[in-house]
Image 1 (cartoon, rainbow, N blue to C red):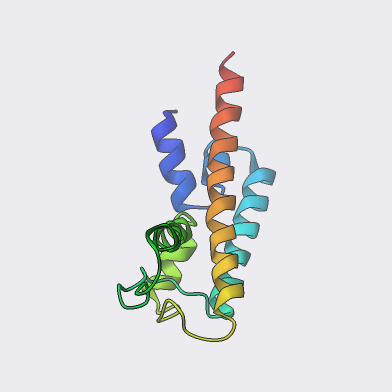
Image 2: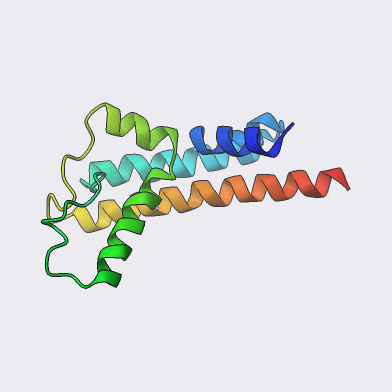
Length: 129
């Protein structure tokens, strides 16, 4: 199985790379962790939009870059993030008082998903030898 297919399916379906490798326990763990983090993030009204220039006004270049990287990292959560966004997740970048907790959970979901894909690809590499 190609590494690109594993990475793409692992991004779209959290833990999906493990599913294709028939490692069902790891698939279940990553699917549960990423999906729960996305659900909790949206329940706490975490922002899922790209920051508008008006929201970044007054910030220095590095801080604005950090905000943009954070918005991109949320996208790395894959399918659950895209589904929640499609079905009307949070409407703003800074929407409520709890947006920081929700945004942090969405960031964590993206990072967990990337770690799951990287771990599966590393396991695939070890299997070949």
